[in-house]
Amino acid sequence: MDVTDFPDDLVQTQAAWNATYDALAAPRPRDTAALRCRLLRLSVRLWWHPYWETAPSVPMARYELRQLARARGAVRAA
Image (spheres, rainbow, N blue to C red):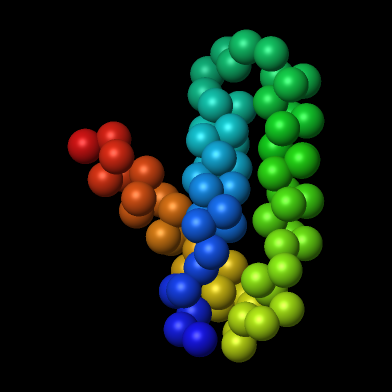
């Protein structure tokens, strides 16, 4: 399995995590409690996703997942 063969739900969860983190990091975010709760829930889903049991190098795969989700987000924004 290639390290970048991530399941769609995992990539979508990472993208949602990125968007939530960015919203929380924005100046004067609204509803910070809800954003923090969402970030925590998404973090748990990311951390315990079954994909990590089969990943050849989990730290590198987590890094590549973050990069892939950021890249896809940048393409959608353009």
